[in-house]
Image (cartoon, rainbow, N blue to C red; front, side, top):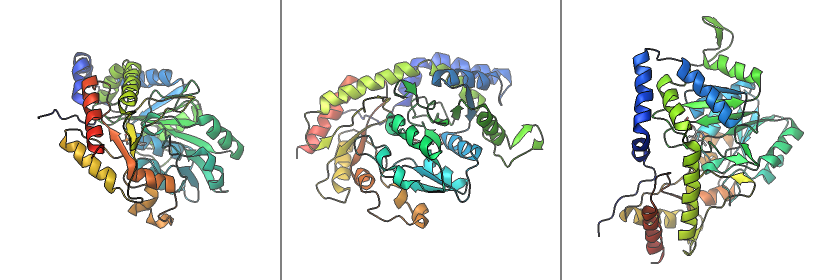
Length: 379
Ligand SMILES: *Cc1c(COP(=O)(O)O)cnc(C)c1O
């Protein structure tokens, strides 16, 4: 039997639904001759800050730059420690290192894949300056508990919202809970553009101004440089596309929530896998639908990897986010963490499998995923 391949994401399908609007937005910029900055960028910043609910938004080149700029704005540097999760994309820790500060990891919670807030306090030292909670896969961290700890220890909170645009904790948008929110508009994120893009949101005027200065070569006035900065622009064409797409974000996130619910119903009867859950108090936006494949051989990924290969033979392309936790990456050998330092994270790295998830996946395709999973797990 020949089956259709089901990709992890299908960006063309989404483009086709809004192609007229996107094409016009791009052409408008190309025809205007205004290729750097301009109204497209400032209008998007205005609309995005309104969406998130903050008084400021500064566009930049990527989610990575957003994190770096936020850390720099709080003067974080050599001698400082910043706490985050070891189960995230490298950018979260890498940007801490880029400032000269040291990333300090805290193990995750198995049901949410997010930093375990109960373990946070014991990682705080006199050198700790900030916490970067990562709202992984679209699920918000318990921000009530986290902000309480941050306030007691006087720590900055930089939310990594890259995978969670539109997610809410206790009714409040992520990116409007900590001191700053860092967003990525990489194509596969919930609000993804046709290239790179990022933004920082905050209610602090001074921080917003500092971020704007750093991202413009440390300059407030052209050719007068106050700080060592970088060049990080939200591209004008990307900003124009993002304005169009922002109008659809809530609808797409709602579709993702419905797809997650469908997966839940379809996969519930299958044994040998653990399904992701939505924490009460949170509004999950499902950038990924990630299951745990219970391992038969403890301490290896053999079983999960074999399942992934078998699914692929049936046309289902699944992904592994993330195969190697950050504390065990070569780049962080110098931090001195050993295997076993974060058992929940390490076990998750062996067991996670992200299934195809995008707003326009059809019910038939989801059925095909479920059927293939059941088939592969039953022998
Ligand atoms: C994508 C991502 C980033 C980085 O975003 P870019 O725009 O690709 O630089 C940072 N953190 C997390 C958790 C991400 O998923």
